[in-house]
Length: 53
Image (tube, rainbow, N blue to C red; front, side, top):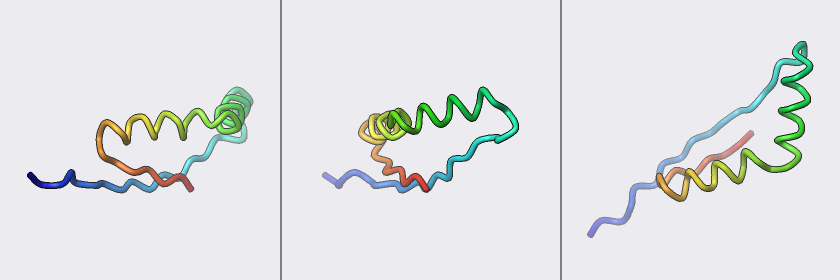
């Protein structure tokens, strides 16, 4: 049996500073760690490791 293939994905996250709703939502989601938790869940299922920058 072969070990699972590990995939790496580097992500750079930004937001539009001229769109108020985007800035507020993005800042709130980042502060709560929502994206990191979601990517960890997806990575567990797919074997992908996400690196946020």
